[in-house]
Amino acid sequence: MGAMQHSDGDFITVLLQDEIGGLQVLHQNQWVNVPPIPGALIVNIGDFLQLMSNDKYISVEHRVIANKDVSRMSVACFFGDNVQSSKLYGPITELLSEDNPPKYRATAVKDYWSYIRDKGLDGTSALLRYKI
Ligand SMILES: O=C(O)CCC(=O)C(=O)O
Ligand SMILES: [Fe+2]
View (cartoon, rainbow, N blue to C red):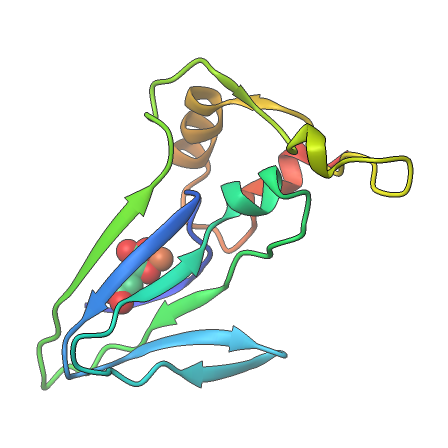
């Protein structure tokens, strides 16, 4: 299975990939292979952690290169609040100051996910919608 370039919408994603590999992350504008390491988990920062940390942590653009001759399996666990939650989340107050004003407005988790669902994987970041 391949996946086009995207960042995950959740808080963090924990990934287990098999020995086939194929996952790449965008680092300094270059696609870099993430080589499979037996027993290792990959932890990706998602957009929601970027929003709540007010850009202290930046979500990672990644993609999966498919090889039509070899099948590949991966297990992804997406961590975040319940996607139906009406709870509002924004940049964490303790991180904010005069020098570090909020870069995003708060959003209800369910509104955030319904926006992402409607938007689809169009290559743009959902965070643009919440940028102040
Ligand atoms: O299969 C992988 O290694 C990554 C999958 C992925 O990026 C995703 O499910 O969001
Ligand atoms: Fe992903």
